[in-house]
Amino acid sequence: MRIIFFGTPQFAVPSLKALRDAGHDVRAVVTRPDRVKGRGHVMSAPPVKEFALSRGLSVMQPASVRTPSFYDDLAALSPEVIAVVAYGKIIPPDILRLPPMGCVNVHGSLLPRYRGAAPIQWAVINGDEKTGITTMLMDAGLDTGDILLQEETAIRDEDTAESLGLRLSGIGAALLVKTLEGLRDHTISPVPQEGEPSFCPPLKKDDGRIDWGRPSRRIFNLVRGAYPWPGAYASIKGERLTVLRSAVIDETSPADAGRISRISGGGIHVGTGQGTLSLLEVRPEGKKAMPAAAFSNGRRLKEGMYFDV
Image (cartoon, rainbow, N blue to C red; front, side, top):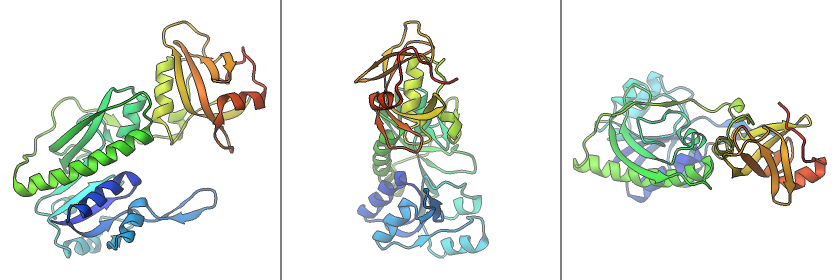
């Protein structure tokens, strides 16, 4: 099939690779412009661009997808279908109508749950037991298009947004190929979304702030869902600390929220609004990741101290 692929982050790379491996004619790859990253302010290319160039694919990086010239460039490629995987911008109606088989989107949730920009992170933060991938025919709404295929996966206690995203990207790649084959062979029929929709906004830095008054399980889920960005963080003795790994010690016993109840080689036990959480790995601001016990030793923390409010 003649395909134009829209995608930007690492999550989209397996889908692009799968299309190529399946023998599809990827006529162009559309991705976001390069941007400055890191403390060195170095211009960095999106992962999709790097992969596409390594495979000799044509790459387009429009500043806007709403210009007549960009539409004309796409139309000249005569795509049968446009595949969209985490591109990062709204696709305008004229482009949605361009390919005869439509625009197929790979979304990281079981729609209509978690429409929006950060479905994987919020599924972990909210403590969901399962999530999945949905392929859908795009329309003008925000993730409101008809469903083509879905596949579930369990969310494990050891999952972070990063590890879950990696697993879902592989599921999505295989499901995209299966979806396109089904559309081509007329074995898949689009089905309207059913059920109460939910929405997930992009994560902000402040979403990672730890409220010790919440139950230990909720903080544990925040640590996993906010990894690697924006990171779950708290402050102690005026120093900001990002929590990279934690473990639930207790979920029911009353505790003094924010109080360090125990310090051992295994970690720092902190009381919460319901139960106790052990901090296992942390990263002080401007420093490298380290075991929580090493941080405690370096800062001379003591049992009975409180994290800052």
